[in-house]
Length: 161
Image (cartoon, rainbow, N blue to C red):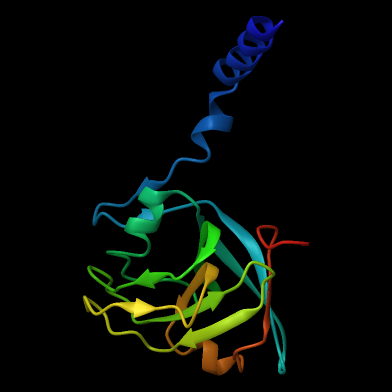
């Protein structure tokens, strides 16, 4: 029975290559990675703000992130999903855009915000404690929406959402 199940799964994958290929990143001529985006919301004291967030949930995607990206729409970002709660370290190597980094716990609660990170810097940017996600937004967006520790991020990858 296991062999039949495996064959059915293999057949479905081969018959629908678009399902498999849709999850692969694309790269532009400058080497910037682009991932499939999903809706995400940030709830602050100023209201609920919706964004399109590219989902980086694989180690290679974590390593590349927003490197080489020269522009990004205001209501766009990248959500790094690590799959475990731990101390996370980031950097800005090869990252052209200044960013706001939002460190988020497994339930979607903001643990801390690092505003206006420095492009191309190799300085380590550490989470303020154990987190499971990091959301990168254009620099200045966190301040614009009043984002602070304790606010909530809504996305399917957070526990209970």
